[in-house]
Length: 146
Length: 237
Image (cartoon, rainbow over all chains, first blue to last red):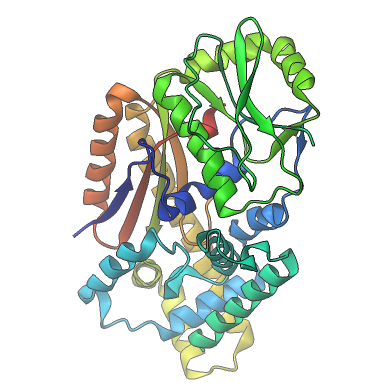
């Protein structure tokens, strides 16, 4: 079975799942006019950097080597159904999943603070806090791989 | 204070703004800045604006409603001019290019496609096809202390991963491009090797979606396709 999901944002509602999915477009694209100031959006530039692929770092090499060592060659293509589970969750939390790597932490932390909505002060979180939560989830991810 | 900018439309746009909220808490009231040919949808800029859920949703909501009635150029979140007079001056000054871009995106919406591939599946494929990877993998499994070999293994896999993802990316984009007006490639993320926006004419949306489903079907179950849209044409303004 092929995994595909589609959202239709056309009509009025902007649900949180949908908002998460278009977040990078709203923050990263769209028309920018030189003469105007961009409000200082704490964390945005960091977010942009963190979601990019990190190319050819020692970290990446070692992670790949570990993943390769752990790989069960025999189980091969016999277990495709975990993937469908993952897909079901993808709208809510694009960052979860064991093979998605270390850098997604920042995105996840960010989307959580978005999804929390109006009610509390957690959304006022300063960048250092967000940063440290990203770091800790990065560490967790690595520990899980060990 | 300043003037927060949401979108630019042609002067003839119906601009039904009642009931729509602007950014900030309490939500700012939307208003328009008009010149002869163009119109900017703006509000007062709230102090210390941040990318909170409420504000990003308000920004997106204004775009969606404007686009339901006609062409609009979506602004990036967080764009603030000094005051309404500066906004009007910018509309006058770049009038021609805004009108041109409005015509380009008229009747079109953005569809954003992300594709991921199960990493274990990709690693198995690399292992099957490279004797050197198998050799290094065996050696590092038996001898976990062999740091240089682990680095060499990782580097080799990394190169293979990139080459394969690059090939998949251009294959997929090439097959979908004919169904769209334009494509705007975005950088891959850690979780998705492909993240591309397509500008699609409204009448051809179904055909485009069909093409994506077909491509997903052919790729099989280790690939995950996520298609989002229709969206404001953020990537094409």
